[in-house]
Image (cartoon, rainbow, N blue to C red; front, side, top):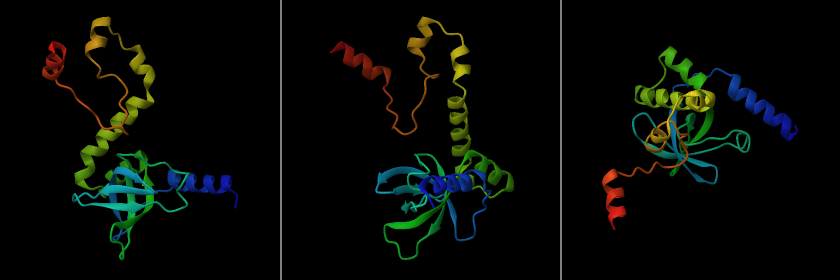
Length: 165
């Protein structure tokens, strides 16, 4: 099978298939990607561990911080305790919530994740919003937020101290 055909089948499987996790599988949230096709994830109970990405997903499906996955446990794993079985998109998350299979711990995170994606997919709405010169310099709430980077917040007190020095 050629690389293009393989990619087509993998993407079709991920985007089109409706999946329900079995009793052994669990839904996890990606926290970070340390590299080497490993991802640090967190379960609904708060347990953190590494999962590996199977070769069929490599260079075909991209996973970033905040995405949700279905993983199969690896019994003999010490550090890497599971393998990615399925990557969940927002349609899959929505259908799992409707069926009552979605963990309650991830409910707020999934809603926030969907709202960020909808804001990113509709940039023309942000461009049409009226804004003045003064409000744009002080209010940065309508700017794009990169979810792949840690957010750094600076208080007004710190900035005033730096300006005085």
